[in-house]
Length: 259
Image (cartoon, rainbow, N blue to C red; front, side, top):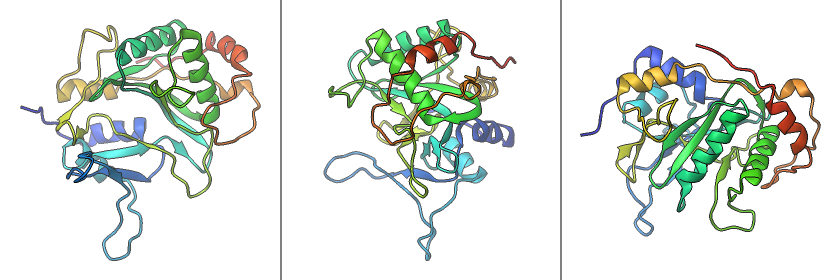
């Protein structure tokens, strides 16, 4: 039986603080597509006006309680910044690559959270202050290259996908959304939980109380902005790694928030 989450005001507030960087969102269809069988996402609109609905606390509450399943956008087009980065992997040996990435992130002073998914997992990194998407993408692509982790779309059919998928997006654009954690995956008809913060392959958060406690943890923040890196802004599917050496040096000075 699927465990039920009670979306208390405190949990909704914590979730909003961690994951919501803009009010646009998507909803996963309850019904599978008649041909593909997949449960696609769509942007919800108001009845009668077709105006786009804006994400609010009620949306988060409904998502956590299983009434809907939402997708979240990483980049806010007003500042081209994101407050989280997610590495999505859903191929053979995907979890091994995610754990490899998580281990190296920890060695470089960056904490991360590993979430299960239907065919693999998502590795999340949360920021204390929103930072430019392009700088995050440089860092993650460089990290994957150093570890020999495949990146999808770089001449490979399978590999990790980095959210956000763009260095920047135009005003009024959306980018690519990712399923919000702890919601029910309509295709799998179940929730996917986070692994524990100390041993990613052994301890699974499997109750609403543990999930709420996980969301209340403070996360280490990358202070990339203070380094004043300069790079042209362009929605490139593969970021320029020319400054990767400088980024690696910066990793030694990442700051942490403590509980």
